Amino acid sequence: MRRWLPILLFCLLCPAVSCFALALCDYRSPLTDLSDLVLGFSYQYFNDPFGVEDRDLNEGRLKIDYVRIYDTPQFGLDVSLSNDMSISVLSVSTYETVADGSYKRYFSPTTDYFAFAGGSARSSSSFESLGLYVNLGVGNGRFTDVTPLARATRIDDYLVEHGSLSDHLHPVDLQILADEIGSYATYESPAELLAEVQEIIEDSGRVKTGGLDALDISEITRLIEEDGFSRYCGWDAKIGLGYELLDASGGEKDLLVTGAFNYAFTTTPDIQFLVQGSFSGPPAILETNRIDATVAYDCLVSDLLSLSLAYGFSRETWARVPTDIHTVTVDFALRPLSTANVVLSLVFESRPYYTEWNVDIRLSVGMKLL
Image (cartoon, rainbow, N blue to C red; front, side, top):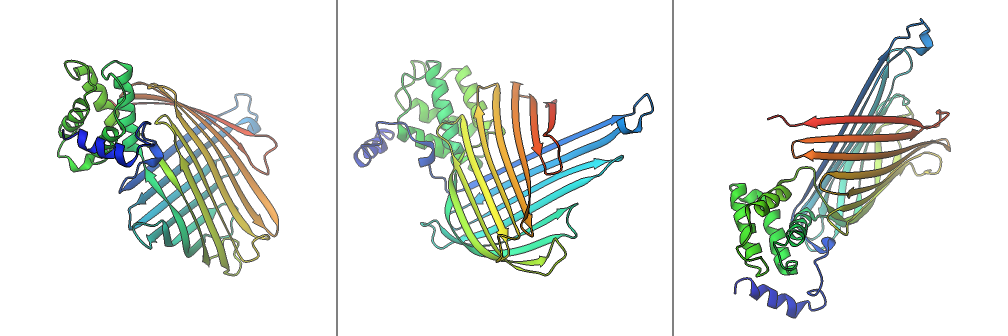
């Protein structure tokens, strides 16, 4: 009876929705806490055996990308860091570091309008000095962490596919299941959460005779605790004014116009689509500006294989002369075991002084031993 009462109310209040599965982007979580850190390192040494110095190599590359998004009904913050360093003993070494952060306060917990204050720092081997900026302004929009519902949906799909459920869970049961998974931190132990999840599923009335077996429980546990899996939806856009505390070109400090846009969307637990963009520049923004944009697509092909595609564009304009950087990244991640993973990365990059696209192929193998 406890489970049927919310279902009855749901059907009466939302008859148009109750006949369909719960859409991931319709899920609302009171807390969004997302972070992503990607590290890449490569090194090569080659001494030409014929003594031709032009063929000697002694170089390496370090790349770091970090993103953090935190959001509550009252306030939120976002932080991003990107570092690309190329070190060569025999030729030119270069580096570029960009760090951005902002704090936003919503005008009301029930609205998406907010005011923000933030700052950014930029350093590059092509700059005369460190660039340091502060800004403030207004914006609209929110990001929502839909990972709990994505995990609940994957559990539901698995149980139906393996015959443990006669039909998919009702949207209300799926919502309740997602809420409990999203409250993972409030449980004293994973076993308590697992017991509650099992009770919700078995009380749905759609479980096979005898209830969930040991294999079902094992797979449910894996899907709840799976590392590196996150899904989010939403968008935000903001515009403001900033000021240069330090000018990267060594010139005078200017007033800046700044803006940013973020958009995330997912239709199934297996897919994530993300668009991010930002711009900044003085009032004469056509003469001097910086534009950054990223489009990313992640697809969980199977429990063993995932695919990630990303395109990045960066433009810096000085005295109406633009400098463009294009980067295309393709990642194939294979996880044959829960404690091991193999990642093949293909990185294609184009810069103004390149005569052709730079191609970087990386193969990494990781294993958890203890």
